[in-house]
Image (tube, rainbow, N blue to C red):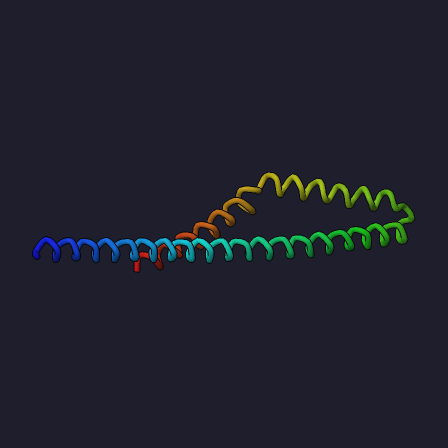
Length: 122
């Protein structure tokens, strides 16, 4: 009789443990899904803002070349000035790429992921 009680308790404990592990796995899946959704949203926002910045620079470049051609009557010099500006901007961005892009991206990703781990610990 006692062995039946003990085996029933072990079966109940095993069932409870299986349910607990299943619930923890579901929680982990939800946390990962939320973190990926946040990262995806950040990536979409960065893409849209980059596209808008590109379009603004594109049209400002044409406006400058047009203005320079009308004022100084040499469109090719205006285009060369714009090209020089883009080359200088590219060099500056390349030299500061870690500070401008990598460090903020890593800190934002780690903040999102570590924030979720803090929720789990509470």
